[in-house]
Length: 252
Image 1 (cartoon, rainbow, N blue to C red):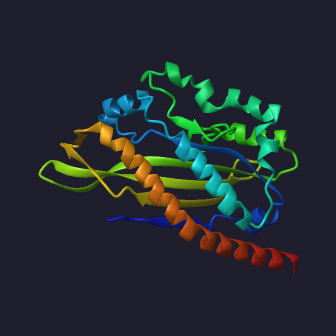
Image 2: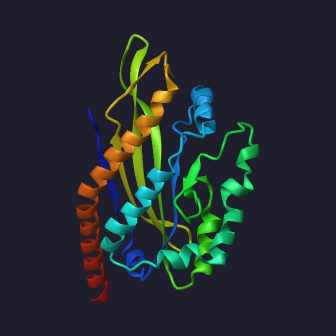
Image 3: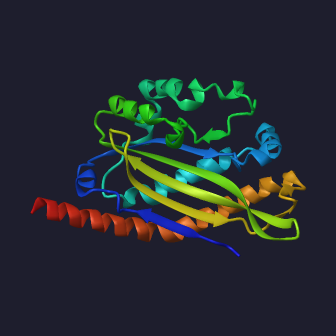
């Protein structure tokens, strides 16, 4: 059964935090190929991440276009033109201080390939890994904005059903859109989740045919994008109305 959740976090956003946003810049859009952080899955995911045929670049670019063409106009503030962002030499220079560059992922103890795949032109800025300094630095690169947006898609393998040590695993695809202020504090977050239709057999928790995971990832992404088109506009429009109302109260 397809399970979908859509969570819009507004409680932690202060009225001032929103009303002060006059212009925003999208500074990162990427996808994460790592399906699990479970140590028991190390060998499986190491094999997947080293598999050059497991390429989600097309999916990531489709996600970026969906966010840009369908959702940015629903925010109650304008966005800096994409070309101005990705063609900036100062923006490109931020890549050297991202976590994945300074950590030297390819030389890590796992010797895996970098699991993050950036959308065309965009850097891979991962806020959950400690890229706050990169977010803060982006405001120096683009002094005309007072908020930045990071959007990413990631995936997770989960047990759909199971009995007696045999289970059917499916893939969740997650869409994440986050807006940060100049202190690298998150002021807005929207997240959606959709599941792949088909599953793969696992014995004792281990997937018997890893090659079947790749089409499941793309299937989950398709389900996610279709769901986003249905659910996101209403949620973002509702958010915009709340912000406008708060701004009006602030003026009074």
